[in-house]
Length: 345
Image (tube, rainbow, N blue to C red; front, top):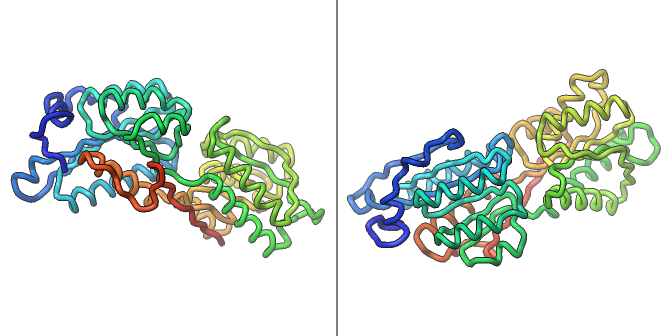
């Protein structure tokens, strides 16, 4: 790890300290001391992590994994790692201001979960000007922004793969259970819960999933589609309205993520159609969704590997904090894509 006595960025960090970072939106400060000799005690890596919205169930799970990976790295490297978190609460302007705070406090590396993926340019400019490397994760900046500087990295998944695996779960379920076509018309009538309007992953997951199902020979009829912004509460609200409108005509629920799928299950449980049992597919692999798969309320979910992404984020941050060029397996053009897995009944 970097010796804090060396000149440059780390000395700036040492001068400014942590005083100004304390504010309402600072979620946590994890400071872990290291055993070892005086040299190890003098070494420190300071990492700022910005979350688009910690209320997002997957982002909350990812934060826990990032915490764990930094602790493991600290023990393995024999260094001191300080990790501070900001919750941007869904506001890109707030996140930009939080970036300024971390830079002013002399943090070595910033890991950024963008609020608006198309608004990365301002953050890139700030990081480049201060020579603070950036590891974007979960929400991929546009390619033009990723190419603006050689110290920009991205960790995420392949949205097309995620949607395709959702389609594969759907196909396997329908092929194994003729009862999925409840009205026997040879067509599966479905409703679709999407994430944010204009969000790249949402659009790609939807397109890939539906394409996979149709190419697999299952005919579909879309009854309705709505943006529920990744939120369980909004998924419940949308599903409740559809149950009022379509009732038992809903044979399947396809959701861009698990939280919205769980919201749909909540609406079903509170309705007069609790026994409807449509095919419900989610994506993220959060524990509550896995439980719903185990007890038969969901047909399956695609695992958005939080642990694998956290390992990649922490590996990049650690190498960049040592002023080294990261050499991470499976990285291409400074991008790491962690494969999906599936969980089914």
